Length: 140
Image 1 (cartoon, helix red, strand yellow):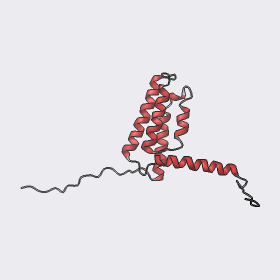
Image 2: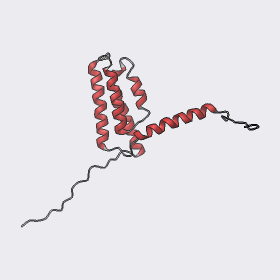
Image 3: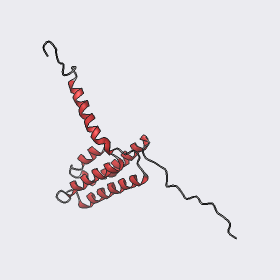
Image 4: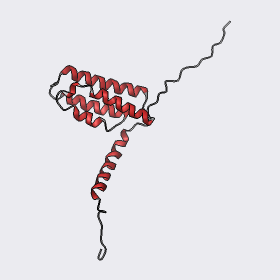
């Protein structure tokens, strides 16, 4: 390497590092992106969100030692698997650790926003199950 100069960055190394970090994180999360979200997936995500929000409201602001956090982790994983990971899930997960905010329906609101975003992306199928079409015959 005598006489050859190696340039490790082009003056904007911070942006390149951040871009590479986000690309590597997104490649890991891309597996969690659904190709299609069905009505059943949306209903399951809402059911999980409402169940967790109601349980946290009933347990009160202090909950049981660590039980609220376990519910939040389960909700984050299940909702991410069912309707796909979305960056809105992260602040919702973090917000649940703030006292008294776990009594708000944050998971339900977050699922509503993510489902709305998925609809705009065209990932939610509004097609109902195909109906059975039988032609009537007159029996004599």
